[in-house]
Image (cartoon, rainbow, N blue to C red):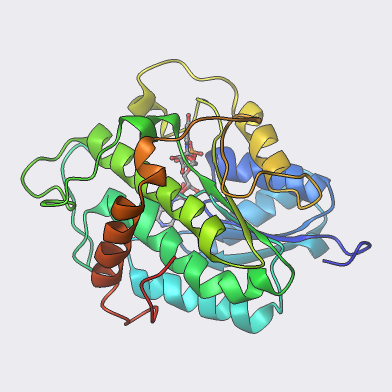
Length: 277
Ligand SMILES: NC(=O)c1ccc[n+]([C@@H]2O[C@H](COP(=O)([O-])OP(=O)(O)OC[C@H]3O[C@@H](n4cnc5c(N)ncnc54)[C@H](OP(=O)(O)O)[C@@H]3O)[C@@H](O)[C@H]2O)c1
């Protein structure tokens, strides 16, 4: 981004909840915002709503990809790469609460693990050259619940023991491990993860408590996603404040094991060539 140009920010899961409200803030601040939805039609409808609420149509773009399909994610990354020379910020916000019963995607993965971790991992890896072009930033929307998470290395897809909260916590733990490892290993990009606060969205029931207004989380995420706002590279934030992440996030052995697993699950180089963060 040059000093005068508005930042270009891709936000996933911008059709509802925190993502939609964050997109509204970023557009109001003058950013070019690429809205992602499960389909382009979903993203276009979100764009129409934002424009009806006052967003400048010239700042809004849309892409679609169902994160339950890794080929969709790769196709979306390819489209963004073709249309944009650089990205200032990628906000990995799309996510689901673990469904009541275990669901397996067409790629063979437990749904929560794929939508909340494997898909954003893949998207980030494929778009890293566009971030690197402008020393860009990846913001991973984590959750304080990641600290309750564990990875059962013998059964990471939770075939033998499945619970919605455990699946969600594991997916957010691995996403947070990824963000810190990316910060450590990738030159010319910054990566952070953030718990945006517990707010009232469709995902709320997994938190088993009353949430605040979605605008509170959107204000946190929009700030974290604004290139001129300094962040600690590799940091984990709760709201606006740096916080302590789960011990596994700094465990070199666990991170190496996660890369090996991720590489296997992404089809041994079918989508990305190497296993490093
Ligand atoms: N709400 C909270 O209190 C809270 C707390 C901590 C962290 N978070 C995190 O904040 C992020 C946003 O969640 P939210 O609370 O705003 O929930 P939300 O309203 O349900 O939004 C989730 C977004 O992800 C999209 N999405 C879901 N499944 C998808 C798929 N298969 N492919 C592509 N996109 C998909 C949704 O699209 P559609 O709506 O169009 O299906 C939606 O845009 C999540 O990562 C969540 O884990 C939320």
